[in-house]
Every structure is written in C-alpha cells, then in structure tokens.
Length: 184
Length: 338
Image (cartoon, rainbow over all chains, first blue to last red; front, side, top):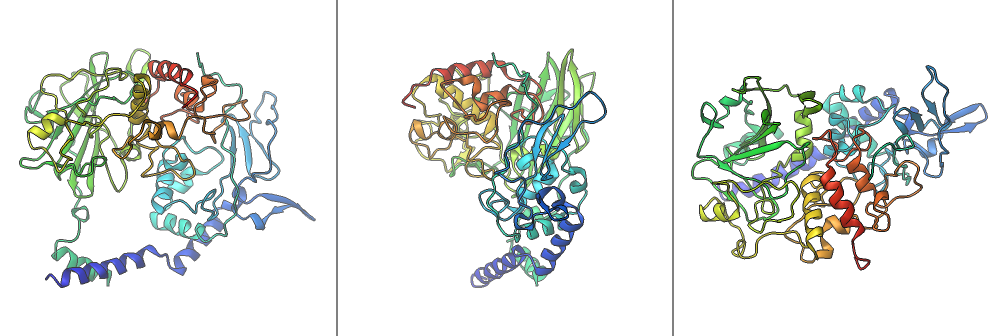
C-alpha cells in the first residue's frame, strides 16, 4: 500500500493535468459560441473601411481601444432616446454612465490572460465586474451569459485564452456626472 | 481512466469528502442546532465578537460557533485556520431590537460548506430558509431596507473552492483588541478570544508566543491602526493579495507576514496610488490622496450607494458615515513621510 499510494497520486496528477488542458474540440466549441453569441459585436472595435464600418480583426476581441479617448457623451433631449454609442461600437453612454467593452484577449496584463477559469465562471454567475465588484453594465447581455451551461462557459473561456494577446487597457466605466454623492 | 482512478483513490481514502453527497440546509433555523430549547442558544456553542465588525447598516449582531466534540481548529497557518468538518457558525442580525436574519455556514466536508440564510418570522419565534437567490430590499424598519444575499453572493465574500470565516480568525479574535475599533462590540460574558481557544485546547498548532505577541495591525499611530483594521474587515474579503483580482493590485488583508507598518497592504496598495476608477468629472484620481482626501476614490466609493460605484458592493444599503469621517480625518492627517 505504501508503494501504491504515491503511484496513484502521480497518476491522479497526470489525470488532473489532462483535465486542466482543454481539448481542441472544446476550444472549437468555444470559438463557435463566441461567434454566434455576438461577442465580437461589442468587443472587437469597428474601423472605417472602403464600404463603411467593419470589424478591426487586428484588434479582435480587445475591447475599447485605449487610445480612443472619448469626449463627454452628448446630452440627449428629453424623450425616448437614451443611449449613445461610439463609432467603434465599444463605448456606450446611457443612464448608467459610460461603459466600455472589455479586453477579452489572452493578454496577461490587460485581458483575460491573468484570469483563472474559476474567476471567469464567478464573473458570469454573479454578473459582477471581476466576479465580485459592481454589477456588469449595459449593454453586456448578462442574462444570456448566465443561462449558458458550465461546460459551454468553460469552452468559451478556453477559446478566449487562445485569442492572440492585444495589450490594450480599457478605461474603467464612469458614472453620470456630476456626482451627487455627498463627501462632507 | 479517470473513473477508475477516482474509484481506487476513494478506496484509499484519497478523495475529499466534497465528492460525497452535499448536505442540504434545514428548512428552519430551529433545526440547525443553534438552540438547545425555544430561544435558548445551546450553551455548548462559543459566542464571539470580532474586534473589527463588518458594517451592515448598523445592524446589531450576535455570533456563535460550534466545533464538533473532541475536534479543534488547526492554527498552524495563522492567516488561514483549518476548521474541523462539522463546524457550524451562525450570525444573527437585528435592526431596532428585532431579529431579521440569521446566517449559517456549515462545514460538511474537507472542502464542502453549506451556506444558508434564515428570515425571522413576525412573532420572532423561528426563522425560515431563504431561497438560494436571496431576498432583496426588505423593509426591516421605517425607512431602512435590508437585502439577504444570495448563496452566490455569500461565496463572493467567503470564497469558492476555499471557504473561510471572516469574523473568526487570529486578528479578529486577538487578545490585543483595538480600543478605537469602529462600531466595536464589547466582549460579553463567555465570549471567546484567542486566550480561551488556546486554554481550552480548541486551537492547536499555533505559534507558541501567540498570546504573548498577539496579532495586531501594524501602524505608527492609533488612527492608522483603526483605519486599516476597518478596511481589513470590510474590504479584504475581495481585495487580498493571496487571491488577487486581475489587474487591480489592491490588498487590504493583514497577515502575520507583515513585519513593518509601512508594509501593511492596506496602506502600501492605496496611499497615493493611481486609481483605475475615476470620480466623475475628474481626469485622474488616487486611491488615497492626503492632499485632497475628498478626491480619494476609496472614500468616494465607500460613500457611494449607487450600484456602479458602491463599495463594498454587497451587504449594505447605507454608507458608513462614522467610518467615512474617521478615514477622512486619517487620510488628511497622514504625515508626508508616509
């Protein structure tokens, strides 16, 4: 038994390592889900092409471009219109303030490269920024994401970890100004 | 292959009990073992009061822990005690003298915990299990609303794979209690601290000088000690160096490894450090700005109860004005040498 225990532990370690590495099929499933889920619609910035706006695939899924500094959102007149969107389709202004599409690439500093699968799942389950902070803001379709199965979410995460890294620090969301929060 | 390995490992006792059937919380609080008889807490449970209480809109709280007979806490790692399987912890919340909610954390296996919240009835005779999704926005007193967190939210603070208690640890139960702690609760009769836990053999493996050199926030003055203790209790469940949130480098967790006041993470990662969050209308902000405390994003977010900026994001609907006042004075008075 003394011999069997370390051997089994080693085998379990191998099995765990195998379980940790997603298969090609899982990654392909994730790519499919990201494609049909419309993630690129907001997380890949648009650029102006010869036929009009088109996704800038050199910045695929890298979120709102850091260099694109947004001026204050236009004030809309009273009425049913309440949301404005940047031409890049990565910044959105509404009653919640201004939100920016996140960098989903594998970049370790500014994307999801530094995330664990558990953190990604927690972000979805809670609907909270970084899995623990403020609610994720519009227009992110959080309810749709929450409805996904765990295996699908793991596949999405596995695929995103293979997306080429783009170093792009997306600005933090801002609240509507001026703040009415009493500080004194 | 994997099934075979799991089966063999189980036979050898290698598989954690987490793989076994999870226990479900009882439907009523009175069935959880808290009470010996109607309304009488089992005298075998240990009452305790953390030196730095968590802010919950001014709720009065009572807390008890049950350790299985003959079992003890393993305290070799002072920053992460290992609790025996079977441990149960309850926290009762009261507003204006009425019991509103009691939470239960129950360790059912080496890596398995049951989380449950119970809502007290009008007659104050018992409390019933709240759905997993929690209960939002209950009116618990005139003008005061309270939300009972979902199980997911419970785990946001207490952890996912590795669950820990936030008010029951070496710092919170230290015999060197901070006399300036905000919202401090007096130690009632029979309440345990490290002294009682060691004396009764309920804490084992701790360093020999735990009682002669008890845990405390390292600080160069009482205001800093109190501020960092408050931040440790209210912020460190999320912002902690051992489980960093990606890209933030924000840490409020006091650990036994800190040996100098300047190294306390609550100071090191906040003071004059740039903030990714921007106060509306400000082109740049610091987490803690001694030159202009009102522009410190840490204070701004503590003061906010807007969903997009409130900190902590869970557990309160009112900003803690006493803490804000203390922290504002503290930041303003920080010496330039800091």
